[in-house]
Image (tube, rainbow, N blue to C red; front, side):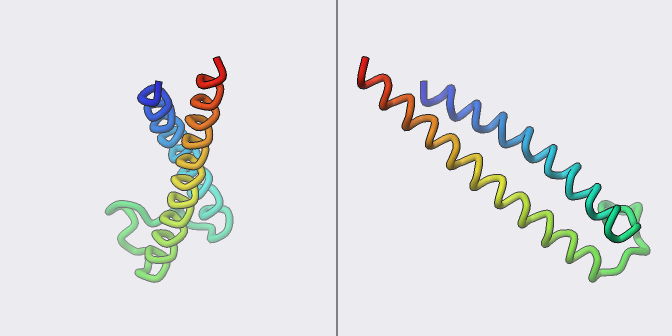
Length: 86
């Protein structure tokens, strides 16, 4: 059953990452007025904006990973606790 929780955690992490990426992109575009500096299509974007965007994206990704890991461990703990009671 732990494998199921781990797979569920991976799925939730991927989904949350996708949503967070869209959210960061939207907030970046609304706050700066420019598209996020991704890939080769935005060669005119400055190094500063690319570094700030990378820092923001990495921070959001780290927070999501920590929250998903804690949620997965909490779910496994609750499942093991209820399995012991039965």
